[in-house]
Image (cartoon, rainbow over all chains, first blue to last red; front, side):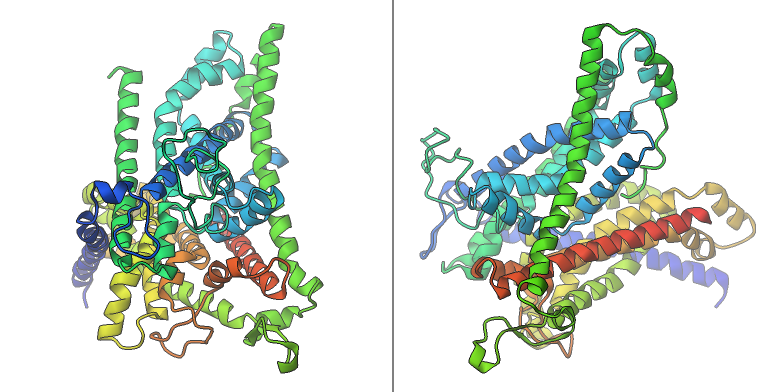
Length: 294
Length: 319
């Protein structure tokens, strides 16, 4: 086989490979949306699930997913930002920096079920909260934190050095420079990264099975007192998220329309994650335009 | 993913002079507080990692210290009878079936996914960068964003019936497990490989082409060997993700405690055993402790993967 023919064949192979990945994605999205879209209506999105008869919705699960995401972000956004600031600005080549980086690598590659086990031990049993939103949020924070640290470090590092130098030359302290000059210019990167990380948190299930639990109490959506046990806002009640719901009804549900509920839930999950991705790009671009006035 | 840290510009030289200036008390206080808060947040990451290792480690070792199971028996025996009464021979927690199941599906998944991923990465960097940027980059980001339960669900409702109807068996099988996993780890391997191929100096490619190599020869003999350490890192990260994945595998693998004899046989993995049984066993019982030991195995495996990556990256830098 001469070299030119081999080159042709190789080119065909590369195009085929790329087409295969696109085809896989198209098949996945097409399959989920095709089956799911017809299930989704207002009733499905708001009604509570049924345990024995058909016709249930996933309203509480959708609420739980968003509420859990919000709680998680409240924990990880400030911590991740501060740790990112430390790594990007203050950490030199000291030994502790090496340990911090090794820890971040370890946390990133930890299987989420192991994080779930840790959460069960510490956030569920030791704190005495039982299966609760708070335990779930803390477990998700363990998964999300290394991601947020990395995102904020990269966003801060990508700010041009001249800005930093100019600010310092004008007499600002390091912290002032960070807070008033660097963080505002790193903001678009931070927002984009945080939203994409939020998408990951939204779809996580394995870490939640034994922390936020697999059941949701009957919720009274007019009760907004966060200490009442039937209030949706109570952070110490068990909460099944949408992703956990898909898994649970497929493994142990008694309802006759498992297929319908699972199809609809999967489609909602995919649509939300897609929405997060699009939002992240759009918002990142928009903030960037506004800040740079282009 | 695992790059970019060492390339940090060391900006401390700029500060060394500025820090000696006479800053007023309030500002100095603010600077101190801000710096301390940043340090504490970073230290928390270390504390978290240490406590995860400590707690999972101590719970996982209880099987051997409290219940007196031998480590070799746990790792190399297939006798899994965690609740067998004493008169029938007593309980046994040999986990070889679970360990083999995990290794089998994740290695098969990588064997399928790695070549395809490298092909796609080369395509995006060398063959058609415009197409790569416009079509494949977003596609890979979406694939990476699809939650693992959704992969599992599509496997369960599409792949499992397909295998049952056209290939035989129950449908729940090793085959279904590794196909789902191989698609799940595609974005991980592709994006890390793409980064490492992009980081190569363009002169190498130009030199190879100038010497009369075809594009394929350049890719095969120059670019891929030069990006070797990055590509291996990508594959190990993919393997780590496959090995630790729980729900997607659990939904399609069948979860029978038998060693499979063909790709169409069902089996079980470490993660799916933990997923299914952790809620139904009593804390501190032998069965429960054995599940924690499986968690410890997962933790140790992810250490192993990190170490492999560190060695590979260091080796890649020396050359």
